[in-house]
Image 1: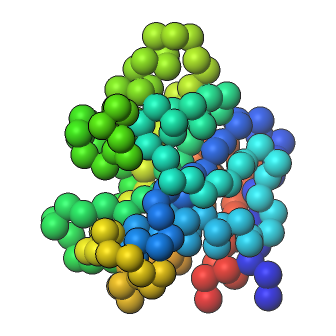
Image 2: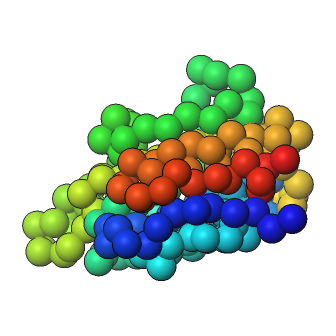
Length: 180
């Protein structure tokens, strides 16, 4: 059975859902996996765009231009929760790592890039949520994720469903069909 989301597209909050990571770096592919599962869901409103990106800093900020709200999905290593744990944060609640997780020494953190974009007058999301999955191997070449990380997909989809409802969808989504 096709997964289904019964979100209405009457809400014109333009939302971007981004799966971040690299699918050939083990657990780092979880953001893409979740975004790809969400893309299979029927009933995604026309005002919700879902993408898989391997970007950070300024390039990610540029991808967010023109959206009212963004949901980022990514692997995270905090060593504060069991591997496979799913969490949701507001971007401003995460530490601004100025040198971590960047693709280039000539780039900056997403928080710094957003501040720069706003100072230049870019239309950027007012709300950015970050859905994370606690991971353990994000630098090993592999197209397979740890079992606990791969098993986190249904819970992450439920959290994203709730975030989409918070953005003003008129009907309650039913993503459960996609995660059974």
